[in-house]
Length: 45
Image 1 (cartoon, rainbow, N blue to C red):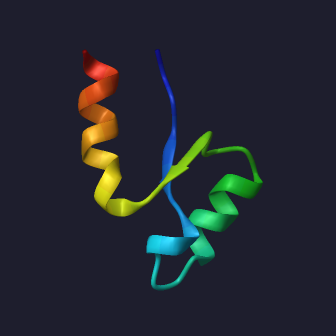
Image 2 (image 1 turned 30 degrees about the vertical axis):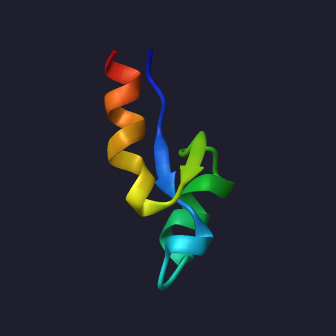
């Protein structure tokens, strides 16, 4: 299963690059930076 994850606006200091990646469809799911490691672990189980 492949999913591209990007940082969300709420946890970004500057949301420019994560927003652009999401807008062009390069990112499927946005999460808070602090939540991304656990999301990756969950995906590997």
